[in-house]
Length: 153
Image (cartoon, rainbow, N blue to C red; front, side, top):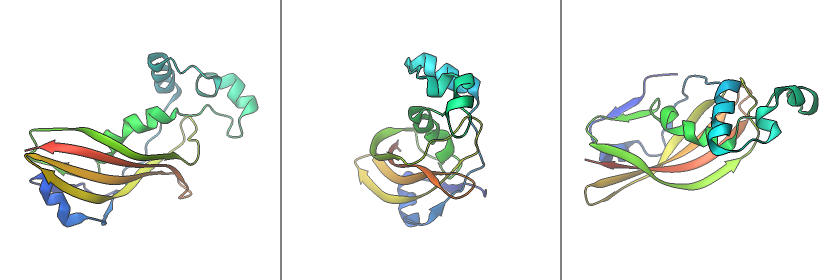
């Protein structure tokens, strides 16, 4: 993991289209986090919250991190790949593409790799679309998502 790309204005991201961003540091999601997220979203499927059953019935022997929890982690992971210094605000504008390719087990390491696909301007708002991949240690891509973030300068 290297230092994140640092730009002054969000529009400066356009100079870095299709260049690799990341990888980030390795992350893991523990059972306490999974349980809290499952309770918050009422997604109480046993594959997420029943460690005993998962130990016997799932190939990994561990519960599975909910896909929406992985998507919720993208903002913090993206901040490890690039930072915009002079944005007054930033927000999620769109998820254009999401594919869950492989489950990520509780406590299994993963990290974000990606690149910018597009940077466009509308008025005072800059939109940056990033192709994000959550990658496992064996280089298997577990999640693919194209995320568009908006920045107001």
